[in-house]
Amino acid sequence: MIEDLIQKLIAAAVTQHASDIYVLPHETGYQIRLRTALALVIWQTVTLAVGMQIMTYFKFHANMAVSERRRPQVGALTWSGPVPVELRFSTVGDYANQESLVIRVIYPYAATRAAYLVPPQQGQLVSLAQRRGLMLFAGPTGAGKTTTMYTTASGLAQSAVVLTVEDPVEIKESRFIQLQVNEPAGMSYDALIKVGLRHRPDAFIIGEIRDQQTAQAAVRAALSGHLVMSTVHAQTAVGTVSRLADLGVAPSQLRQVLTAACYQRLIPKQDGTPAVLLDIVTDSSLWQATVTPTERWRETLENAAATQIISAATAAKFRAG
Image (cartoon, rainbow, N blue to C red; front, side, top):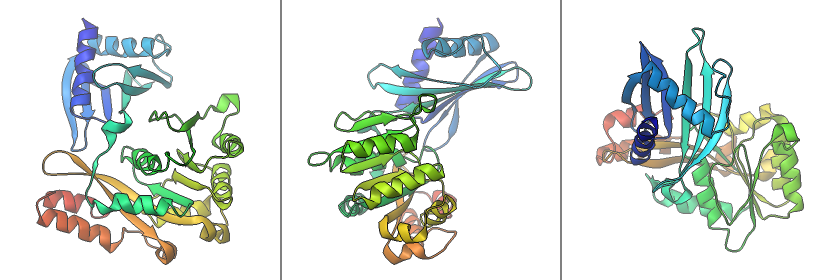
């Protein structure tokens, strides 16, 4: 039965802590791949009929249009099991009318905390969070930025009100007030940040600064004395500064509020588990234009390779960020 295959697929993804599941057209059938911290691996190749059944099953349970196979669709589903996970779906048909499916797997908060390649970095983030202001995180999708922000903010939740604005909410945390973006309903990042300010939180987590309105709202919240943590598209920690400038934030305002900028990756260790590595830039170093990570980042990778925590190939792969 197709349900048995899907149960095995999700179980395999969770066991390998895969971040994504791909169901892609392949020759005369479909190939199912899992993206882990180490690699993109083939899990199984199935027939065309089975591949379509897998997509139909997920689309039905995620309230997506089952009969629509060309236009892009998105959906979401909570998957119960020994380790409950949130699934985010994206489907689209190609030029040959063959549909593909990608599933983002979002794990419970406690299960997503990875070790730090440099353990003191976790404490450094907590210390920076005490200063309030704006903390920015950059890095590719799946680098664990949201988990890092939640981990940092969770230390404040005992004595502070933490409010998150996300699209969608990725990690469920009962101690936080969690708001979810809904553009058709007029609930944009900008609008929800304004609503959040009326709730008088001590700290904000903003899922992503993606436009001028969100950037200005995040800076206003930080100027009013809140801790604001958010992600932004940039290739380095210092690159977050120019990115916010591109979004219309005045340099004078940014200098007032920017506490730290961090670039993050998940580095695969020799034992097969991932470790968080951050390039944390603060104070005057924030205003030194550069297109590469700091020397500290490169030295950390070299030391980890020398002590055989990671391979030399891994060190070389992540040297540029």
